View 1 (tube, rainbow, N blue to C red):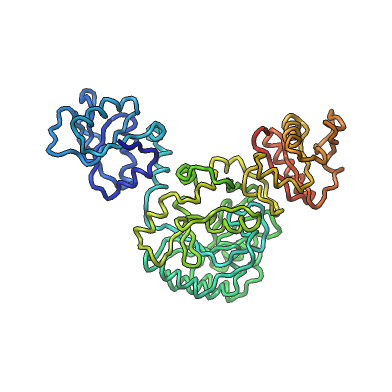
View 2: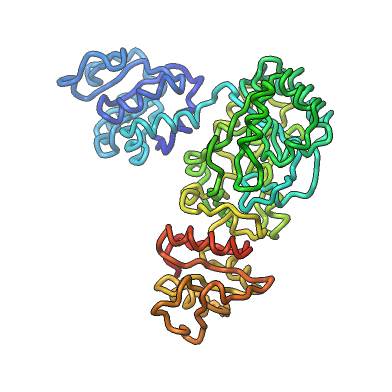
Length: 493
């Protein structure tokens, strides 16, 4: 008997022929709903007692297992019921069907089978499907300096991918996958590339039927000449804007492009700027479960990136070396984290994209929603990309910093206690208003933000409970030009 912990184990059955199923309750019904999604076929459903069950379920015959005359043992039997209810059938199979491979759903997977919506999304993540989109990285660096950039472009040194390399890779992708529905021309900032016009011509030449989207922050749009915009119109290139809270008149740009007959698209909102970012939540120690990370990741099986002949399942693993090089951490990238597009066929590629990779252990996707922060220019500290938990790595980072604690309530006092035990001195507490605050806590002065003169190596720990207060505090620090801070998302200690 084997325990199935996630859908990846079921997906691995593709190509093994027809399967048999035990169970006709909620767990089995949930599993059956996503079987077509996974392109798996159930030949027969067994139950212990036929009474109360229909003759078929999803057009599959239901048979009482004790009454079945087995000409030959089923090759594979999936037991789709709760583990407790599975005990009798396990004994039966052991006695009467010793050659049958038995797969028992874990308790966690059984629960997910009942949660149909979550299960369908999960199934889509683990299912190999026609490559829907792929991103071509043409420049690794950017002309903005966004804190926590999920492409880590603000940590990259200036580098343009060679045009001949780009075209050779595109030709290979088309050879294997045909006209991929969506091609993203990406960076960094792709408009920085000196050969951008020729690259767009190459892309349209190789992918005549694909939708080509050029992603940009818009900063350089006013500097692009008539030849560029005429080309975008004639080759049906979609300009995809990300609206940042910067000095770019996006509305005027969009109006101008629409008048030129150029299609416009948006990442996130078409109206509001991206004032809040979500951290990619790196786990520097690499202690996450890769399957769990892949299962909950918005990039998984959706954001394929190709650069220099290598295909990566997401931009994080592609660019993780920028993080390691910048901060001295070693996020190990293995050969199994990417594939060589010149050595893999379509089936091998799609199988690769629908499975976790070793690097998934570095992504704590459970924390991504909690680790959101206000947009700001980067101070290039690691906590724009990962959580701060007072571990040994975090404390080592603070050793040469002038540390401030924003908040003098319970969270702030506890933060002082933890840092004191770690022998990290605190310069002062910061509060928005003095009100009833004492002048100091345990010898550490309390000051309002306007009275603080920050050193070059200042680092602020925002230690308050209220999420709304955290946002207001971030805005205040950003207005003062403070880039290096971290927001605690749980009680310290």
